[in-house]
Length: 294
Ligand code: R5P
Image 1 (cartoon, rainbow, N blue to C red):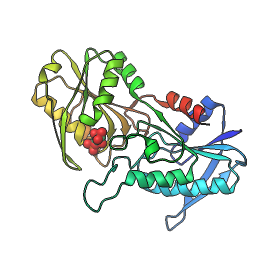
Image 2 (cartoon, rainbow, N blue to C red):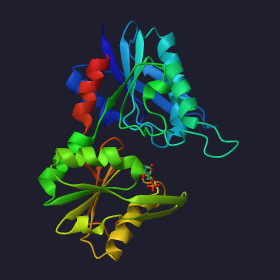
Image 3 (cartoon, helix red, strand yellow):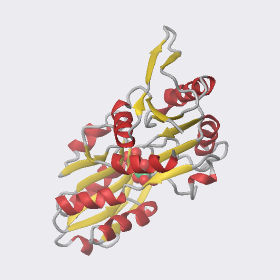
Image 4 (cartoon, rainbow, N blue to C red):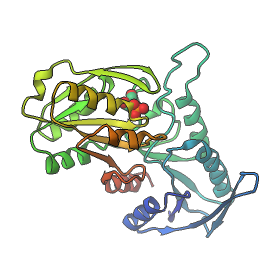
């Protein structure tokens, strides 16, 4: 079946990378806001009978989620045979249970919306913790890309004698996988989150630092408070200055400035969300995964 790629505004580089690797054309999308902020879309090409791959990473997701509903409905009206979403960062996965009375499971609600609009989804390391698999909440076929191989390659090429440090128990499996691939040790911090911007961490076995370069790895850097708390903790222990690696560079508000001020040796992220810290390319794996999905 013929296929084409559409870039949701702001995702042009990702769309181009997918189209080039998969030898597909890019169908242009005219987009604007009406004066009252409502969204306007016009597809500038023929999608009838085609598989349409929509490239849209889901940081700052609220407007995008509405926009994607409108765009998917439009594509169906224009006769698209299948509509696939490529969202290297998948939003709303952290509210994966009702933590307090009266709360909901936003991960499930957003999954319902996207499953109704699309026929398939490809993403990179979604925040799967209390939800074990995307298929538990998404009713459409999903494909996952794991950033661990690309991160461990980067560590091997750039860090001498690394010690991979995961920021919390949830990251243990992930940090250990990266460390195993990079043939180095891993430790996991004990973390307590007291509020959105109040995080405390501690290293259970300080001896693991001896002679090693600490490499903090986290899936999401949002407020950056987890990274900052870990840097402060390592500094208090007179450890070498750590390198910070994140998969998804959200950097909410002033988080990037704060993290830089925190004094890590280097901040490196994967290009699931475009940011000046992107130094680890996961698009080749995304393209291979999308090839399997279409
Ligand atoms: C939490 O479970 C995640 O793995 C990250 O540690 C967390 O999302 C980081 O958030 P922040 O940058 O706001 O501390």
